Image 1 (cartoon, rainbow, N blue to C red):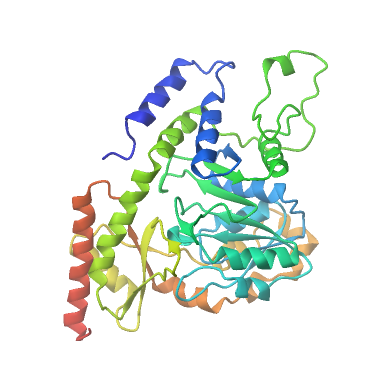
Image 2: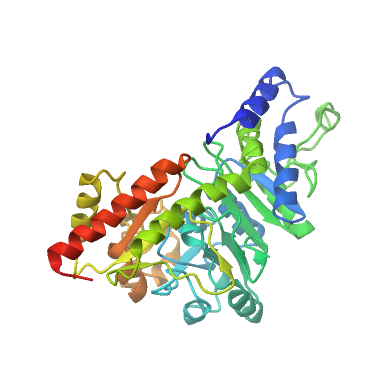
Amino acid sequence: MKRIGEKEQAYILEVLKGQFSSANTYQMVTRLEKAFAEKFQVKHAVAMVNGTATLHMALETAGVSPGDEVICPPLTMSSTSIAVLHTNAIPVFADVDKDSFLITAENIEKVITPKSKAIITVSLYGLAPQMDEIMRLAEKHGLYVIEDNAECYGAYQNQKLVGTFGHMASYSFQSSKHLTAGEGGIVVTNRDDLAEKLRKYSGLGYAGIDEKKGRITKDDIQSPDYERHVVLGWNYRMADLCAAVALGQVERMDELIEVRRKSAAYYHEQIGDCKWLVPQLVKERNVHSYWTYVLRLDTEKVGWHEFRNKFVELGGDGIYAAWKLSYQEPMFRNKVFLNREKLGFYDSYDYKDVYCVNAEFLQPRLLQFKTNYYKQEEAKRQAEILGKTIEFFNRKRGME
């Protein structure tokens, strides 16, 4: 099995044969959006240049304004909270659960203030937080919920597809994700009003764009009297070449996700009754999509680098660490926001004072193992190396 197959290549050639003429522009994007919406059982899908632009546009669509607060988890790639800064709003960090590694309704409620406008949930590593609880909390406080599902394709919760809980959900086609176009992103929603704003705001605010129509036509622009821009917008539209690859990936989505689930199952078999390596907790009625397979290491028994180095020595591909917590990054810690820090509302929130106890416990202990092995033999080999690494430390330390 190849990650990029014949379908993707055929769609790319189809775009190239169109010579990028204006008559053919965005046809592949339209096909991608239709296929994605059908696959994810939603009314609307809007494709964009990347998965940070999608979050930014979702926040703008939700009416997030300068000085508003948007609640995010700190344990994730910082693009989630960077998108909040793009709206001149304030990222506020809620702690995660120590076992699932995910943001919780209980911790979100602790940081809600009168300035709160939205919540961004993150389905970390391919597993969604408890969305029903979060949606009830959001409804109680009148908050928008945006699902950041960059790492989560095809997961379920309570027999409902992840991505259909929030007001909007954002996906990434970046090169490491379940589905890729090299780069790109897409937002889904069931609301017509939100879909129209997503399209307008990501399409330079063109008058001719609505919830179904993603571009203006020749008939629109072939007049000196045509007024194009009715609202401030960004040029975040996806290119047809990326859409061609993404369309092929969507049509192959189930097999691409299954690759990662099988890899995760091989790893999981090797853990056995090891007490000092704990997998991410998957609660009942949750289905994980395993962007990566993640373990929490007891670093009092084995050091993080010690474990990784032995895994690599035995032939492993390496182990990724969890990102530094967003509020610990120098940009947040020192408020280097390209002069946004001079806006008065950032003075009231000092990221040096933020402390999320569970996230800080987890970050230096998480081991992220690759799952994107398109040859099962290699996935099995990497899992066996994990097993040998565990055996080595069990013997060396006399652990069980």
